[in-house]
Amino acid sequence: MENVTENLQIDQPSLFSPAHPESPTILSVETSVTNAVVTWKFGDDGGLALIALKLQYKKGSQSNWQEIQIKPPNKVKYTIMELEPNTNYKFRILATNSLGSSPPSSIYLAKTTKSGR
Image 1: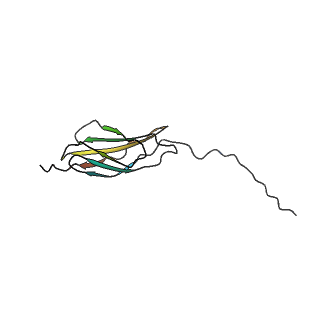
Image 2: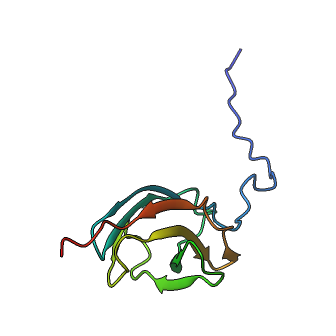
Image 3: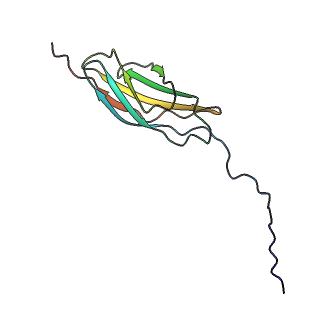
C-alpha cells in the first residue's frame, strides 16, 4: 500500500480586516518652566501604516485644544515649547491611518514649574 499525500488549499475569508488605529498612550510629561516633553507608546495601528499623529494640549481653563502635527508619525517623544510658567496643562494624542483617526488618548495632566525670577 502506498502513502498518498495530498496538498489541499482551502479558501477561507481573511481573518484580518484593516481598521482605525487604537489610541496611543501618553507615558509621561516632563515639565520645566516653559517646556513639556511628552512621551507616548503606540496602540495597534489597525494593520495600516500611520499617516498622521496629532499631539493636543491646552491650559486647564481653556476649552479649545492646540494641535501639533508630529512628523514623521512614528516618533515617540515631542517637546512643546513656549508654555506659561506655573500653569496646569492637559495633553492627549491621536493616531491616524488611511481609514481614519483613533479616539483621543486619555488626558494626561501636568503643571509647568515656577519661574526662578
